Length: 153
Image 1 (cartoon, rainbow, N blue to C red):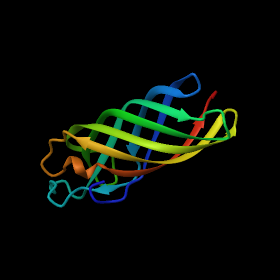
Image 2: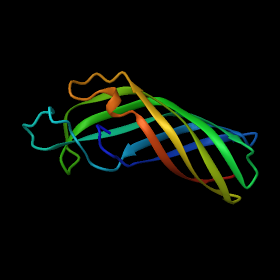
Image 3: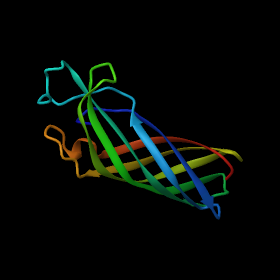
């Protein structure tokens, strides 16, 4: 994010149809501190950038029911960013929104009937951010994922 490595965490939920198609939604937010650009307002001292996004998700699992499976998924939604005072959650200025599209693939291992673990890759496309110091490309990029799924598969 903004040229720095960031860690995001999130959650997803959905309904599985015919053991292959999942329809639901997800929400993700940045856990690590990312420094604001050098041309950000400095009257408040050092600033960080916060980023979160959410939206509906669709996933298709190939060979679900076997010990391992491959899944393709996509989120289409909205992202939000704002400046915050360094090491606090006090917002500085206004929030900005953007469009987010994140398709990806993952491999999953069936650990138990109700628990799957997986790893995957996705790419976050971002557009529509209207901000003076930040650009849509500051939030786009390749993402590695670790997934832990609980439920009835």
